[in-house]
Amino acid sequence: MWHNDGVSDDDDPDQTPGRRENRGNARPAGRGGARAGGRGGGRGGERAPPKPLDAAALERLALRYVERFATTRGRLTDYLVRKIRERGWDDGAAAAPADPAELAQRMADLGYVDDRAFAEQRAAAMQRRGLGARRVAGAFREAGIDEGDADAVAPAIADRAVESALAFARRKRIGPYGSGEGDRKLHDKQLGAMLRAGHRFDLARKIVAMPPSDAPETVVFDAD
Image 1 (tube, rainbow, N blue to C red):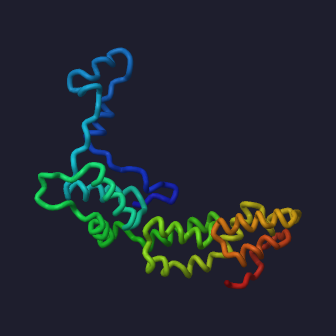
Image 2 (image 1 turned 135 degrees about the vertical axis):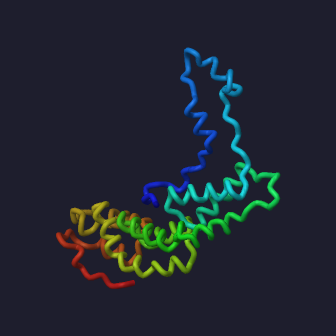
Image 3 (image 1 turned 60 degrees about the vertical axis):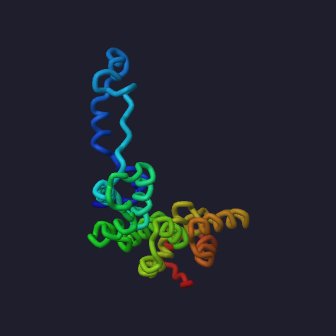
């Protein structure tokens, strides 16, 4: 049901039937194009604005979103808030606008949204790319992962700290993956790169200082 980490949650899955129909009936420019604004085309081929939302339409948007994207309650809530702001609420509806946070929680209760699973998958993917715990924590905050779910996956993140730091060093040819040449200025630059990638200072410093090695993974690094 979920897409991988390469898909942005910022993509807008809100495609109403009216919009799809207008695209399908569009006429090419040029010959006959002047008639596009005539019978059934609307003035200048302009699309009609989407209808204001009601509770049923908002739930359809939520379902469509969780079908397409791996997400969190926080991101789903933000998406629904934005849609209500963009399209408005049906003034003819008897009830007040639905609560996006409540709807997001209902999606979680149904198993369509799982913040813990999202956190586990996002952390593992980021660490495979060589990013450290601080960068992972920042991604959690951006995605709205709460403290309880973040704490639950913290041990796994710590267990992969060395593996992730070495993956970054290998990609950037730092320390054991470098040539062994370089002065203090270069080492400081490499250390800064590892810190910006979210790695611990003590771990980054040890990796930067390591000589070229055929098997750096066998080195024992002390825990922080």
